[in-house]
Length: 477
Image (cartoon, rainbow, N blue to C red):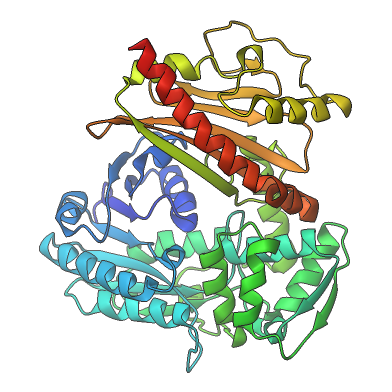
């Protein structure tokens, strides 16, 4: 196998892909990372790799990103798409397998999920079917199946963290008694990076996990001990995984469709008892407590991004206890104004208390922050018409500024969580589109209540704000 082989990380903006890319780069591997939104990858500050746009449902782009590739990591899934995700996953896998065959890829590495003997959930069935479709092509596939991954940003891990951090008392469904073998993120990344180097792994499927088989109730209790919490867990047999998934949207900041798909698969034990890959790739497997400590340490060291990126420690007020995944609300408006005109207007955000809409509502929020000792009304702008990274605007701080494209502000007002407000200018169509998005990383149950209480006001304010921005920019033109 050539030393300069090119690795394609297909789905690099996802959880595993986002950690696998820097892992491979540290090993001096050649990497091409793809995403449907490559801007997200650029924001992560990776160096020494290729970044490209790709969508598995767009067969035309696959030949381009697979050209010259030795090993292709297939890390995409469509759980966030809702109930139609199995069909989307089928089409995506078929497109990828056909393109890999045309480009004569040496190996496909697919990360699947641990599958019980007779899976009931659509999520687990889809993961198994995706592997079958990839194997139907001529390119050898190595499938590595894992259950819960313990690491910052892992959806299953973040559900557990949110439940323990937000709920001192939990009335839980039967799935809390289900048993799994959670695996540390670093252990999984080592399996993924080493497997394609071994000829013996071609065409094989491996189940991998950590050294302990634990129920989800025990996982929550042990995590609670690590963070100084003692959750009271009261199982309720009548509360099915499907029913419990509906209230997760209010309790966890993990995207609802992903959390629902995961919880649907928790009704069965998923245990990795396959010793073959650990024998081929020997390493020290971390137990649960060591894995959780490593996850929390990695969370604190999360890189600071120049814009909102899911999980960015700067976008969580540098507090790893705030929700990793963000609640969000967005509004956009199309306009004939130029990108330059829109940027001129955005650069005046907050000047003399003008936040583009709802002046009385903004004033009340700022006054409340001032009353409890927050920065509102206390910090004047550096310049009335210019903004640069580091500038303060009342209760906000600029953490990202790309003229004509994007303005990112971190909320520094006192609140139960951390907020980011981001304006974006899209110039790809015939007309420009300006959007305004709030991202909210809640701190416990009060952070969630705060978000839901303000959600109606956000919709009203944002709708009028983007229209005002467009109208003022048109007048400038």
